[in-house]
Amino acid sequence: MKQLALITALGFISYNSVASSVVYDTDGSASRVTYYNNSPIDAMVTQSSSAYDLTIYTPHFTNPTPCQSAAVYDQNTDALISVLSANYKTLSGQIPEGFEHKAKYVQANCTDEQGNSQTLRHNIAPAPKVTLTSQLSVDNWLVSDGFSPGHFDSVVYQALINIDNGEKDGNCVSNSLVGQTPTLLNERYRFGFYSDVINVNGDAKYNARAGVLVNEVICKSTGGTTRLVEVWNVSEQQQNREVTVEVF
Image 1 (cartoon, rainbow, N blue to C red):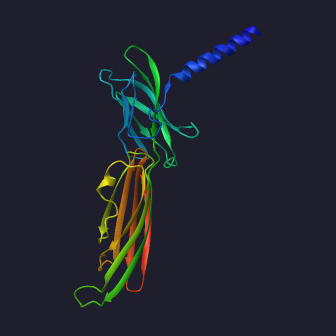
Image 2: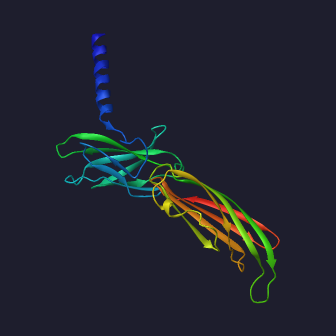
């Protein structure tokens, strides 16, 4: 009985010594960079913006091969998602489909130049979520003069954009691919922000020959890149809207 108690106690001590060696993401949330103090690496830097191909840089001034193994886990369940390769100061690997919108973390086993090992974690955001709803108000149809197509002389575009990058380092851009609407996202969204709701209202122009108006919104985070494309099909009789969203 005493022997069993001793084994149990030793097991508990061993477990806690392993658990205490795990260094969690220092700021507690997903971001491009997690810094570490007195560790085999100075930081983990997510260089990729892909939901399926992950690349992380693990810099250290003097240690050329600081990490020996790493893997990606589901942040909510701790379930293993993918095993990464460790080559010099880079961790890389693929993430299967189905985990695009799940919060994840990378856990790396690293060793310093004195042979001391440490398990380090770095959080990865879900892929950005982007929604866009809009209305097109048209007026004053001008009949074709034989040279230019018939078209609406007055077009007003209203939109509501909801963005959740899942981390403070997310960034987004917008483009009018065909025609022209008021700017959906101004320059400040090219720099890091977590989330926002944006209202847009103003005059617009569509391509009268093609009868279309096309916008796109692209957002990037450590968890992936999300591209939303909105197409307005415009004719004298009706105006229809189509939206596609892809994550890559």
